[in-house]
Amino acid sequence: MDDFLLREAEHKEAVAAELEKSPEPAVLKEAKHQRDTAAELRREWERRQPAKVAVADLPPEPENQDSPEIAVLREYIIDAMKSCYDPEIPVNIYDLGLIYKIDIADDGKVHVIMTLTAPGCPAAGVLPGEVEQKVRSVPGVSDVQLDLVWEPPWDQSKMSQAARLQLGIDW
Image 1 (cartoon, helix red, strand yellow):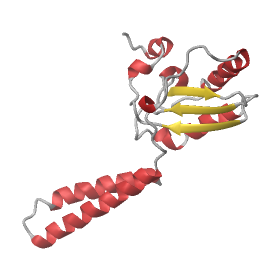
Image 2 (cartoon, rainbow, N blue to C red; image 1 turned 90 degrees about the horizontal axis):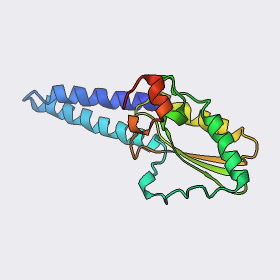
Image 3 (cartoon, rainbow, N blue to C red; image 1 turned 90 degrees about the vertical axis):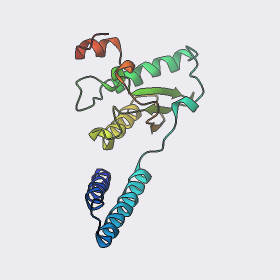
Image 4 (cartoon, rainbow, N blue to C red; image 1 turned 180 degrees about the vertical axis):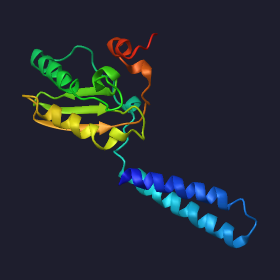
């Protein structure tokens, strides 16, 4: 449904652009109506998008300060994430660099911050839920909060060396 809203908004904007070429007042009025409707559809689409948390606003992740138990749990969580794939790219989401942050509390609560390859990614409606479900299934995880973010935007520099090699990207 969300993709429909965005496609419909884009269609109405294209119609408005064509109508605005006319000097006729009635046609220009319809163009304005199309633009207003497109703006409403975009606002509704944006309202339905996941909360945007800027990774730059987050405190830096402490390096190697996990307890031994949390370090083991982190590895199990990463292994679970590596079983999730973007359907358009034959590389797991962890090696693609879509996971920006994994916080694990002593009580097993996990907070994941991730992105997708693009805001219009077809997997947006499925992949975050799959990641949450896989992390939740890891023994020792008591709860999962997953935030999908768009800043910083994903690019190929976030991929692991293994992912680049698998995709034939030479740096």
